[in-house]
Length: 345
Image 1 (tube, helix red, strand yellow):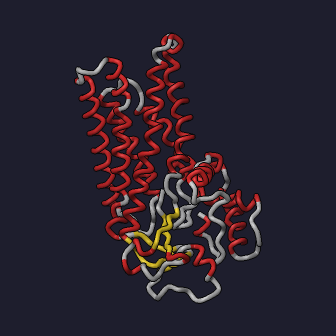
Image 2: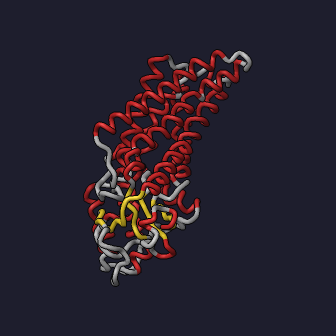
Image 3: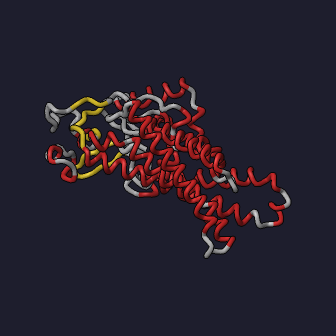
């Protein structure tokens, strides 16, 4: 993100009001815009240079070109490292990366092998996305990464196979209801394992804490004067860390896990319910080959709208009162006694 680029002058966080949910939805729609995937390395460097020029005072005011440059940088670079996130695991590629996997999990009447294969594939993708977009101030070791992955795969496969075996045994519900419940089994597996995956992949953040920074408004206002921080500060990217907070980490990981559930709910619930109804129609009954493209279309449409709505549930750059964290941060807050941290996506 633009915060990782050099310069003492920060860009506005967004051209939208990030204090409101709909303002964050518009911002997240830009970050998840698939068109940014086609930006060349040359265009990315030009965008970084334009933003750096603003942050170093060479450009005095925001312009449409500068907002476009910020969009490219925010959707491409990790906010902690300043390095490009591997393309398939960017939020702007989330819909495309998940399309085939989601369609596979939602395929009607999957057998045991199919359920296992698609659940393993989905959790593998989740691990890559979580690891690529997590807060990088407390990284996982390869051993911890593997352990988290195996636990997440075990959880998702257990839920999927368990519910798949349970639903047909529900004798007190109608056959139609059993069909609907059967189609929702992948949703239950993905939602539960997706949230667990986030906690497992980012458990080290909770154990060790994540970097906390003085609020940007304070940092900007005091860039030419003495800093309120002490010698314990550590340079992280182009910002000075006030220290690591376990309470901030719990909040960041918890909100990220909840946003993943919010994202999977419409994507894994709406398409199968619509498909059940469409499969009862004469049009789709007479065209069985159309089931797959119809399923893909439903998933794609739902995903495009659901992703920004889910990502916007919580700000990525979270601002909290310093007194809600550990005592060591109480006297280090910026304007209004606030501190900030990167929640991760």
